[in-house]
Image 1 (cartoon, rainbow, N blue to C red):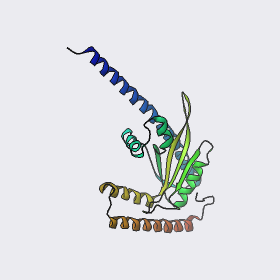
Image 2 (cartoon, helix red, strand yellow):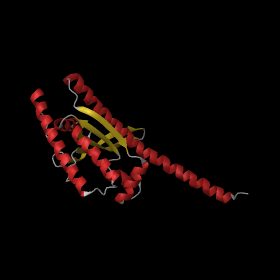
Image 3 (tube, helix red, strand yellow):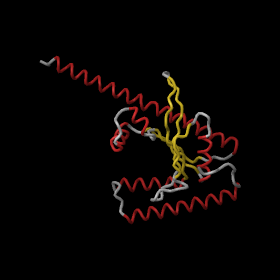
Length: 225
């Protein structure tokens, strides 16, 4: 015969877990909606370029919202207080979108067009194209706040937007696979090879940019951040 008190404790515990799960889902829902807003803006820019300029500066777009497990791992690694307010104010890459462009100029141009929109607020810019990381990593990272209008009112959601070229994206993908394979303990000779590959990718970008400008001519209004 079961103990009524024990059954009650299990029921309460289960209800608490469900409440935590539901709150977590609502929390991540805001980021899904914020990401959708930025994706819509990028889609509009992409289609407008194709229709009006007969040119598509975007090769590929990918996006993601961190999984609960990934978010929990980051909270633990960073030593962040495990409450939603602390997570919201500290972690700005819960929602992320990566825009792979044909050329470096396109990366800057799209970044400018996105961040100059009236409802976008720029939180932070890290220009790893102009100032690459020591290992050769290059990308333009922009953290923006985008408004999301829920039934409970407006919420400003941070979204990390990364702009990079095809060569930068290929290099970053390879680097990620290598670091994963070696559990981040990559042999020095491989790190040197990666840096050489990054330099070669940068040179390829520069050469392709020069060829592109000779064919189409320079486009005004493209200024590195």
